Image 1: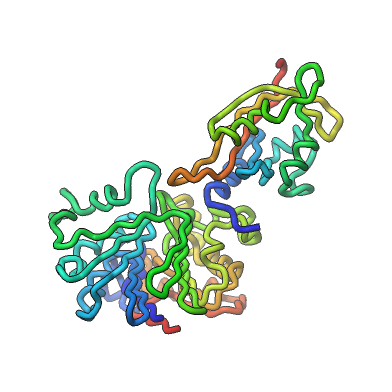
Image 2 (image 1 turned 90 degrees about the vertical axis):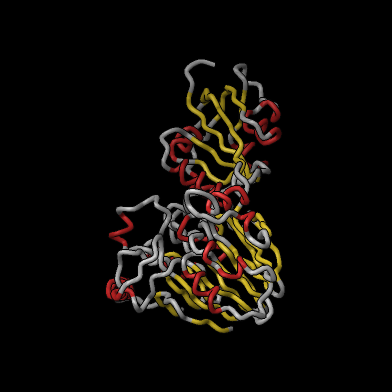
Length: 277
Length: 131
């Protein structure tokens, strides 16, 4: 299995010379095993992914954590969606009332977008998820609701003995009792535990978080504690705040690691990184 | 114990911030949490007990009517809610662990998450002067 990062910025695409290292595209990860092609979220990064995909890929599964605009804004610019020979499956969270299809249609409609879902050569196949377990090819996938405004899923993707956990938008402190000491009462723990790599929201420094409690994101400090609690092998910190430059992201991580030691690998996620298992 | 669903985690977090006594159970009626104001009424700290099976807590906090007769489980608001998955309320006495007989009013409501996942129930209650 390989996982390639096409976007790890949060909230808003942030291109610019100050963001060259970590990239400016919003959430999108390609996960594939040669035959099966998954895409985690359809942020602005999916546009480039669509341009670089080989013509041999005829079935694509896009797994949406939630429908906030930074996770869906790239959908309309994803070239394979307009190819008559390509079948696209859209997976995403169930809500209480509005169907997943209806919520996706809101993006593919005026005044947000000129092309409607019904105008596409193939209507995407819609799959709603909640606390679910299912398989796509050789991937075993488990989902669960996690703490973020609106229905939001975390994904645990297993291929053979290897596990990727993906929670790009997740507020740990609100979704936990006695954080970080009580795994059974911590949102997302079942998704993350013992993962080979955990892609997790670390949008803020702690000082930034204190001004944004309830916005649905985590401080790097909490993300490190959650990764430790979950006993992951590697933490890739995701959803970088759009106003933070490469230099500031390096500084946030440096300060959070100062004087501490962790028994797992830690990095700020970068656009273009490839993980192979 | 498997990790709890988000709705119960957030329910517990919410209860923890309240000044009104509150009690959280799973779909089987097993006690998951009660908050500090509830500790005062029960005369027992949650930290001392942790979660409890329904058979256990039902015998510790004995619900009675005004004449001191034990109430049938099916007459308790929380049990009604667990059975029917709709809100229920009522009044009763409980004998707490400090040896006091405390009149309380109880409102129980089900916790039903997206999309229609029945996950447990929450009861809020308060000391009442007259039943």
